[in-house]
Length: 448
Image 1: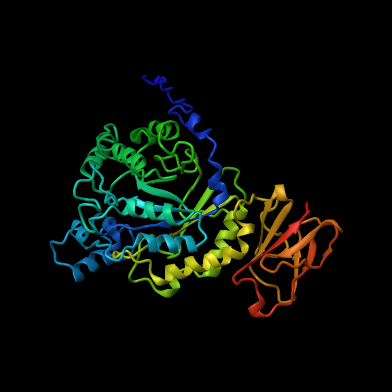
Image 2: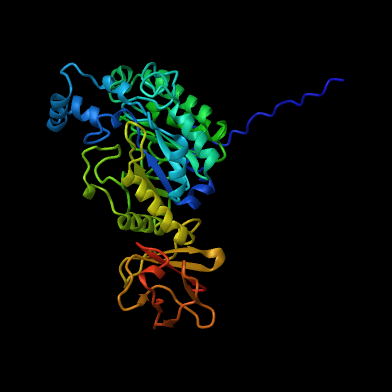
């Protein structure tokens, strides 16, 4: 007896290829709850590992003296950027080890540069002949290895960065010379590659970048995003940013990034992300970085606290070496962040912005909240020498309000101030009794 085959229902197309329709899509809830992710900038630029991941552009296009001299002093005169490809060996790259380090950071998502402006893809792209990690250098599918390790060993969401344009791709340069009136590059390279990337690896964040000065109509961004949200294998959970063509940043797409290292210090009504680097001067690994070039853990905790209080997520970047090593300074910062979040994560993950983002009287005090639990968190970055913390913003109620230090647990004494605010008596703790270093959090129940 033949089983009856039910007719396949067509996918319901919820979104039109217009910004008006796409911008109205509700951001999947997991992203706002996650608060903290890790960015990984890795590619052929990790071979010279000098100055910046923009090495090729600064050397060949802008001809900045320090880059020109670096090449003149260290490489033969006929050496090209493509010659760095075989040296991108990734010989110590262990995706499981990376996954364990990233899990230890307390981050809830990761974004890997699948292709930067140099055009080299970290997977065997059918559209990047001989300039991809499967054919050149590692001869491995880096994207697949890391995706599998992250999904098997951690609770992080896997995301991919993708540069729309490529500095020196002949088809892009030809389109550019025609003022983007032709679309040879997006039609034959960028769009098919993006469809391949999403269908093969199913990233839950698609972090677009590099519009090359071309408008979104050149890239057919709205058409691609309509497919991503309507039909792609990640349509229900995928999150995107705002870098989909000249003029779209901070205006169209999913969440806003606005600029690199964006940290406005006040509440934004639209979900946003602060993408920033531990190395103050570069996204890619730099062999010539000194210790003072790296942000300290205190500075990183401050960035996280400020960002989350103002409704943002923090995307903190590391740059591995050409061998695939996360250098000890990056690993230490990641593990330190994880140690801090083990104690204070309750005041970060799944929180909402409160009515006040920071305290108006005591500096370096920032607020988050969990309205359903009637909790407000006061995150303070300096432990007061007096042992008393003055909070100007909360209005407390005797008999109802309770104050606890996260990681300590015992209710603390507080006194009410007029017309509002409280003074909290912090516990007298030795250094070893401190729940953590680098910043602390009070949980205030039943305050307004």
